[in-house]
Length: 128
Image (cartoon, rainbow, N blue to C red; front, side):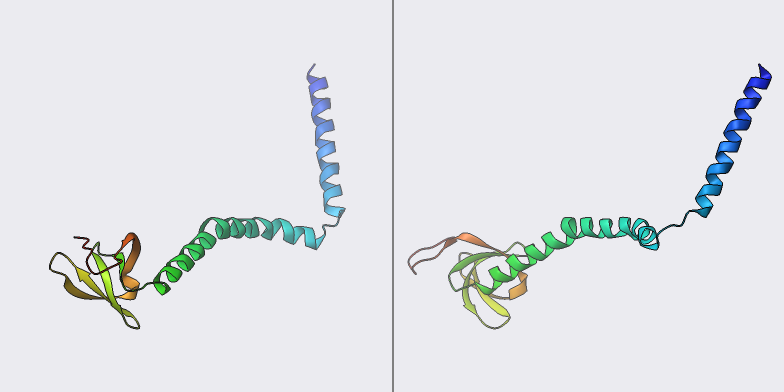
């Protein structure tokens, strides 16, 4: 029985040696080798692009469009959480009317987080 096991072991060892010798003589295509080397990196970059970069660019485009469409009378919220109504717009600054006493504030245009749905249509309306 021991000789049978040793015979099987010798046959397996010979087969492994023959396979290794054939692998050394076989040529590997360099294009295939590069594909297997850099393929996972390219796949990782594509996944990263669609999961992180593309949605952020889309969001940045929407924010830029919102800031360009600001007009007097829009009710806005700043990054700091201050709600106000736009009374005037100059290049990079926005003048806001805030509170019951209509206190005037000047904020940077980039400091506006969102435009609220409520707008003042006439001077008789009061939001506060």
